[in-house]
Image 1 (cartoon, rainbow, N blue to C red):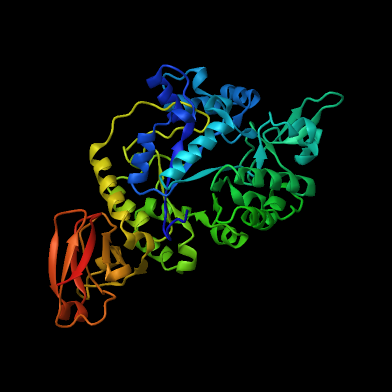
Image 2: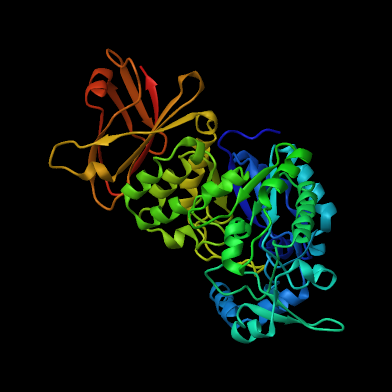
Length: 491
């Protein structure tokens, strides 16, 4: 089951969805209760991948830590004013074992879900958390040497990063999982990648997970790179990703690896063997609301851009509908009509406003934003076209309409070309003011011809002479945050 050059992924908040289904069914729902009709709808919308977030087992110790942490509880209550203890199940990233949670139906239910996805041409993506385990994981008692050890002095001086682990015979101090810029996550324990036995054990887990799905999203994947691990913990890590990825691909050809990555280390993860890396840089620049930094980011070669996972929200980021303002739709057109993997999040199409923490199993009731939902349905329908899934993308040049006008710098323009001469032109005024420009089109032999530009997201249709297009380009005078998605046809 091959996926296209530019696939689309939909992230599912599994635990929240099952809680909603439980309310409808009047009993606890499992993965078997996810309706075929919902899977049909996602397939019809053009998705290639479904990422089921947080299917693995979280233990009671991690759950209690989540419930007792006052800072986290304030965040939970902002999301759910009617918060109950049952709503807090512990973080889906404080993993007690790479087994599907029994409440979801266990591994057999996941296997049946995967079979249902395959029938619809959908691939299954799951989480892999390389940096840490939950405090309930059996390795904590059976193999404490797999974890970063601390001293009583560490615990005294850095209580935010270390904890006592009670054991028969003697207590030990272990480090919380963390990255080098923040305090530790107190519901996790840091794996020690300077220990070859840890590397071997995690490689084994990686291989086992690869038999249960078609791809993995690797949480904070850059944290176990040797240079990052050494900066965080003061000791050199054993390399993990290149060998582990090669072993998995040897057993499961075509298996997909997506890296959650920050700090401008996307290319580093691609060199480690990842198929895709989070494009947080594009997200941040779009959020700033200026066209020039976005354009500069899009100057990168396609060998890089093709491997970027482009998004406007996910479970870590705030909801896009609550974060972006008048520029939201323009930002979406830019994000999802550039090369790479198109990454959408459950609730995004409905315009939901409240981010749901991975510690929670229930989300708030929110009204559907009908206008935004209609926009996304139109956008997804367009993205199903082969030209956007298999075609060739090019960033176009926007030039001034007259010498004293600088508003052309507010524009972004792209061309797509696909099989059979299919052509698309996307133009966005990514600014809060009206702007004008000429766009130079990448078409040869335009002289003596007529071209029709039909906007797929509005009723606009323009007929233009090829001679004028070849000489000056196509003129645009567009409102703030305006956009067009043109199908280009030679008349």
